[in-house]
Image 1 (cartoon, helix red, strand yellow):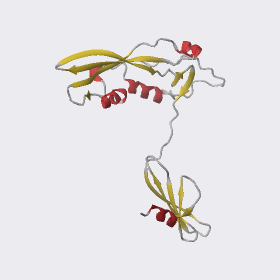
Image 2 (cartoon, one colour; image 1 turned 120 degrees about the vertical axis):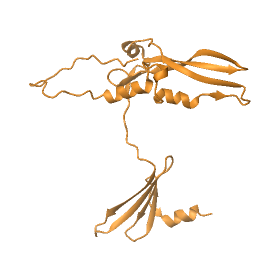
Image 3 (cartoon, rainbow, N blue to C red; image 1 turned 60 degrees about the vertical axis):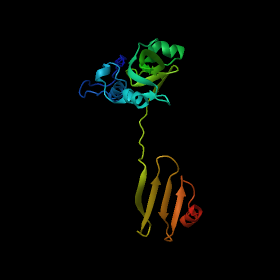
Image 4 (cartoon, one colour; image 1 turned 45 degrees about the vertical axis):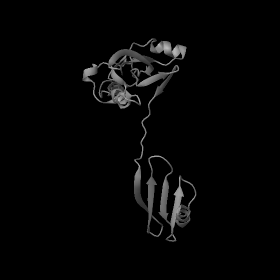
Length: 205
C-alpha cells in the first residue's frame, strides 16, 4: 500500500525560481515506513525486516504438552475505512486493518484462518500520521549507547580533571570525577556530588 503523496501546491515568494531543486526532505521517513510495512510485497518475497520480523519473533507458539501449535503464515493490510480528511474531521486515527493468516495444528489436523489484529496507523505523504484527528510526526532523537565513557576538563591552572561516566542500558547514570583536591567524587543522575568512598562503603557487604 503506497503512502499517499501530499498534493498541496508550493507557493514561492522569491524573484528567482528553479535555480536549486529542493529535495524531498521527508522521503527518509516515508520510505522507511514503507519498508517497515512491506504492504505491496508478496509474502514469499518479504524480507526479514520490520513488521514481518516482529511477527516472526512471536510465532510459532506451542502448547505446554506440545500437542498444539499456532503458526504464522502471512499478513496483509486492508483498505482504510476513512480518508485522511474524514479522520481529521471525525477525530479518528487514519489506519488500515491488519489481518494475519494463522494455522492451528492440533491432533494431526491443520486449520487455517484469517485473524483481525487491529488497525495499523498509516503515514500520509507529508511524513505524518493522523492520530485521533491530530497530525503527529516521528521525531528522531540521538541516544547515547550504554557503556563507559572517559573524558577530562582543564582547570584554571591548566590541570586535567578526569571524569568517567557509567551509562547503563536502563537505570541511573553514574559519574566519577577527580576534584581540585585530588579526591574522587561521584554523582548519580545529575544529583549533588559526594565522596566516592561513601558510595563504595554503602555498596560493600
